[in-house]
Amino acid sequence: MESVENENQASFSNRVDLTKLNEGVKKIKAEIGKVIVGQQQMVDLILTAILADGHILLEGVPGVAKTLASKLVSKSISVDYSRVQFTPDLMPSDVLGTSVFNMKNSEFEFKRGPVFANIVLIDEINRAPAKTQAALFEVMEEKQVTVDGNTYKMEAPYIVLATQNPIEQEGTYRLPEAQLDRFLFKIEIGYPNLEEETEILLRESQRAGKQLDEISAVLSAADILEYRSAVKQVLVDEKLLKYIAEIVNQTRHDSAIYLGASPRASLALLNGSRAFAALQGRDFVTPDDIKFLAPSVLKHRIILTPEKEMEGATPHEVISQLVAKTEVPR
Image 1: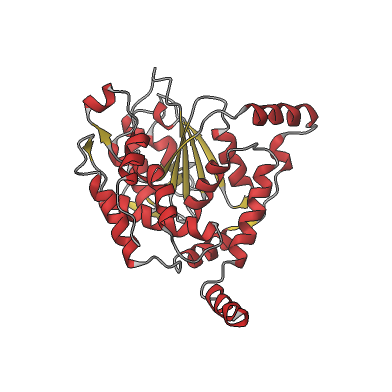
Image 2: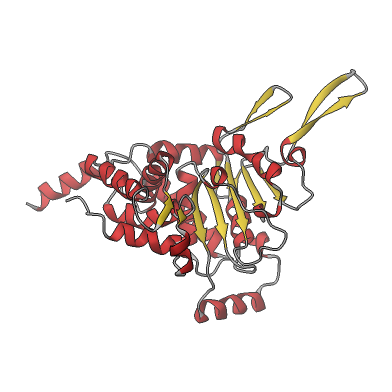
């Protein structure tokens, strides 16, 4: 009996080989763990988004390592990295690039902006005006930039990590729904607990050099693309596809929600669930994967009714309640 079970497990485990992916995830987590204390859920969601080929919006008060986490991820992967600090006077050309006249050959040459990298950190994305935010629409969705009638493709992998402060609204510009919809996850980062903060202080008191100097590149662009190919083979049962559709569909009919999520949210939940399952070492998706990711995928894609907002409800709470009352397939 045991030999039959072992044979079944061996044949099952060989359906999608996730060995290299899991080894790569352990390496990158180990590098990030050299600097970041706690925040395991944030790290898991960031890695899930990278495997699912999605962009990430990090939201939290100042000082909770939003920018640091983005830098650590980029430094542990051997790819091109750029950072853009969004400010009220930032123009679209400052982000995308602009055509410059070359006196030598009397021709215009395109000078690439900071979005031309594999990992782009946009710090305080809601600090720039609407026209600069809108400049990101095409590059985030289609992985390309069109300037003066010419189209420039981005090299894979291409990931945008954006940060914003939910508290301070002075001098900020609210992100439009169309742009929020382009982020796979919205990750809300909270304060560390007492033990974690004590560990942060202990590490800082013992640290001799700079934090980022401790981080080494452990993955390449080719590794990420290989892992993504494996993620696409992760099995999703047809019942779970219907489960995802039911959750997203309920956001359009719930009395607490003024604007529900689009089909893009369903695709995001599907791709995210596959990547999260692979991150856990499984080649199949479970209902728990979908339940865990649903708030991060949906909370920035819905708008609550004014009445619900006045009650003090948050999108995360509403989505969690909605998921809880959706029947789980058996």
